Length: 252
Image (cartoon, rainbow, N blue to C red; front, side, top):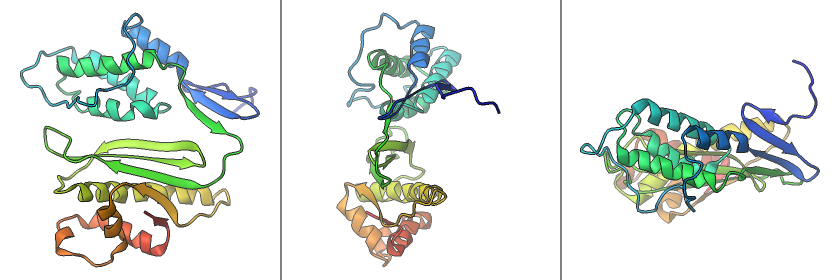
């Protein structure tokens, strides 16, 4: 390793350091992506995906070039390392890489049209941010038209700066919104525990970390150590959330 001055670029990330904080984005990479797929003159979109967009296999739709679609998805997945605003949309489109159709390509092009109007967006880490950890967890209910599985979305902040985010389809089919939310928070609890361990290496000891969840039933389920008959079908691995709530590691 050699010292080459202040860090400005790292693996496609542009980093700008000021007295107020650090700004990270991928403006150059985003411009190259838009140019590579010939969408410089495309009309800008205000959102990466329509709220009424529900993609499925579209078995009777028109087939498209698989390699081109996979190339677009790979580029967008890398861009999502600094753009949490496109994470859900990109992960949704990435499910159809094995047999993409024209409807899937249209959804991907909308994401790129959204990016063309928001090239300068990035992550801002203010210098005077507090070292408090807080997480947010949410889930829809049976949104996948193919297998009726729900999608979990989570993110976590240190102070006012977002440091981690993900969007993933759940492994099992759930029977209620409460169960979908509970599974989402349960899987997210492991991420919170990992972050706690990382911060402890820097001498920052935290407990009772708040996780924001908008489902009252899921919150009550995490506080109740009794296994009710209504929850016995939920896989055991999701119930470790209760243990950590009781230990005081996190609180919903």
